[in-house]
Amino acid sequence: MREEYKKQLITLLFLLFSVTNHKKIYNHIEEIIILRHMTLRKKYEST
Image (cartoon, rainbow, N blue to C red):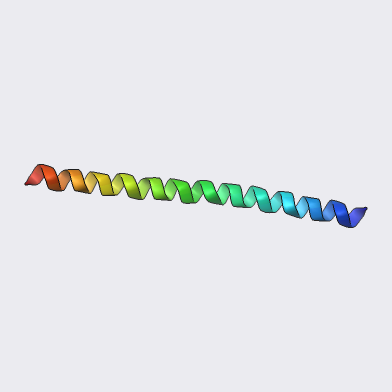
């Protein structure tokens, strides 16, 4: 019984961790896309 509880807790923590990690990665990708878009716009405006 106790082992089962431990396993569930670990799984839950792992899921939580991966979800927060995904959010961080997603935010990072979003930032990169926005930055790239901005630099492209600047290039077009300067020419």
